[in-house]
Image (cartoon, rainbow, N blue to C red):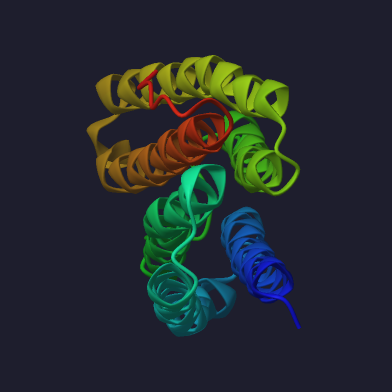
Length: 217
């Protein structure tokens, strides 16, 4: 088998594992939001148990990247593709961390009823899953336009976060007893907003993979 063929097969295996890692974090985010909506404390607690698998993926992908770089000594675009994957896994691992944090908050959430409808937080969760999925997709498909689309989604995420924050502040001002739960809901919204930020980072690296220029947005 030619050196080129070996490199292509190892790179494809790397990308496949990257997709699996991303899919796992998507499921974690979705599960975290479901635990919140359904006030399912046990589901919330279980999200953190999955995070170990995400960490294992990160370590394995990192090893694969280093093995390719050391053994195959890729040049130019090939080198950039592997080094991009190496950069991205840190942000993908953070997707899982944030989902786990949300699950922990749900597990410890005070009260049996919510002080507000979760409409906007749920939208943030749905958007977070979409941004995570498409950010990694933009790298796998070498699609710079898709990466740009993910970056533009962050404006909607920021707007939703501001709406949630303003509503919760108003509820605290109306009744100080709303404070504890409002703070926890605010933290959940903030973690979702951070997931959006990490998805933007992944999209930035996907663009770098295509252009050779890394630009922060």
